[in-house]
Image (cartoon, rainbow, N blue to C red; front, side):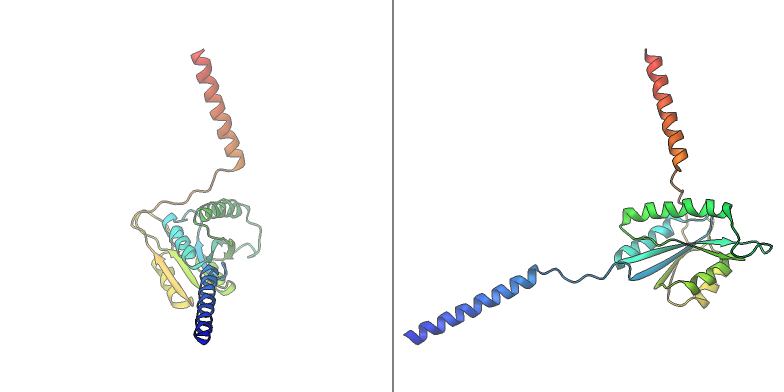
Length: 204
């Protein structure tokens, strides 16, 4: 009888230990990939920042815990050094990159913006894929009603760029507009205050 009782106690202790181990494993969080280890290049040119192509890159990055690397391709005239100061191009690139970062925040995706210079857009694109580490490229092809990379540029990229390439050609698209600058926001706020004052004066 005593031996049977001891055996039952041993079985009970073993069962409780197994339950405790399983409970601990269930509570322990599963390992996650380190965000930002994968990188998705998103090259674009001024005046042709496709909202749909950008959203596709952001959705992929969100699903893969990846960082989106938007690269503004800057065309430098032949009569200037490749590293010459280009204030006009910078004035286009910086607001567009701010718009990308603002939109990426809604997707919870980190952004590592770049500017790549070249004599042509294709030259800048070639330098970009040489200089950057990436796992995938998302690019917007030109279509009716929207600007983007033409078929020759897309074919060149497919032939020369390593890694995965996603080409999106929206049937209808809208460009992503940069957020208003601080000066424009202040002007808009003053205009709203002025309109409110006129309404109050008219009611009085």
